[in-house]
Image (cartoon, rainbow, N blue to C red):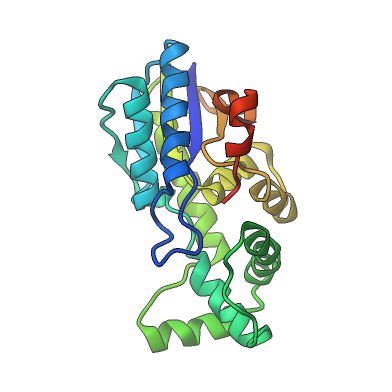
Length: 233
């Protein structure tokens, strides 16, 4: 049996010039998680991490907490989808006077609305035009799903037994759960809205079968002096 620990990154830097880096609290969350793993005597046979700065920094914090040097396989398929270009375009079309998002509750209020528009294809033509103008490529919801499922399948294939650590983002983690449980797009969005920073979702993989063991586990944060440090963005 291969047990997979799928961890969301620590708190990123919402409102900063570069969102894709851990805040001071995000670093602490990652170190606390690593300390918890060390206390539990956990050892990982394989480690996978997305190619984003906040993913790599989270793994570094976990490594520091465990007192180890975890050497990962870096897999860009575990990266979060490019939300901010989609958000920016949505606001340009539907909310041209809206101010920049600076608070977590503002971010999550927009996340649901923008995700729904992206999934059903309401913005497809506008996104194609934006890509042409900016020389960028914005993937579809289907493409996002496909690459995450491929990455999860590869993580499962490497070890018949043992423990695998994946450090990624809330979007890919939601897609992984959707794949395992056969959820609808609406249910996937609901999951995405619930995933906390450095929370762990655990899967059990046996041959061709993969099942959910636990969702949104925050054992390293479940103590009175750390409740204030539980975050979603």
